[in-house]
Length: 273
Image (cartoon, rainbow, N blue to C red; front, side, top):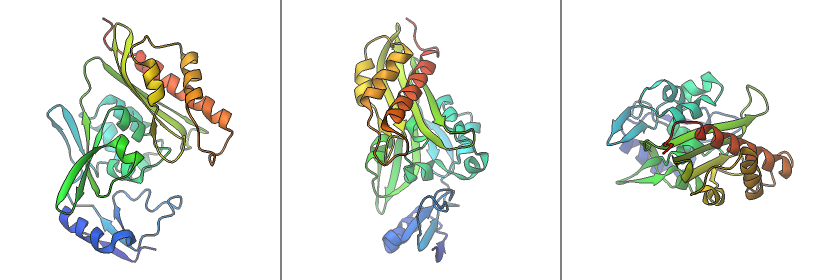
């Protein structure tokens, strides 16, 4: 139960409050996860991040720097956001949620069924973390695999190369339901050969994962047929035992969503050589 609501005026004050109250306190961004009954969170102290100037979007040195309090709806509407990231944010079907949820809170929540985190991983995005007296930058893929302490203040998305393509796909039980699986891919295509693919998938277990074994098979070769990719992914993934649905069903669905994302990416311009 929230008993105390804090409105710090600076990032330093926010960090000091978190250090003081430790596990009894949570940072509050959009509140869509903290206030959700699904989260199971019952913080005694909430530290509001509103008013700390963390909602800006800037283009710097070939990167898009997104403030942690930028809402998911703004990602869709802002011209500086890469189209692939806009597409991923659009997969979150509720505009009410998108208007409140923030990119920093979404990453910090580390949702295993996230539609956005897979694309951040595929785009090699990084999270900027602040702690008392210091800050560091960590890849989003590394952060979700092993969350680091600190306050996410910015998400940095590198500008992709001219031959780099990216796409996302998801699977949901109904039009208004949350995703069962969400996949995002990026790759460079040179003379129809796949180079340096990144494949990220949500829905297998506790957090979004990279399918590095599948990436290794695809790298340096023409992209196989869609059914071959589906079979490759299905053989490679291991859904958590606690998930609903049979393992065979989840393996198949994982393969389908990745194969379709790769097909969509391949259909983009790239470098045909």
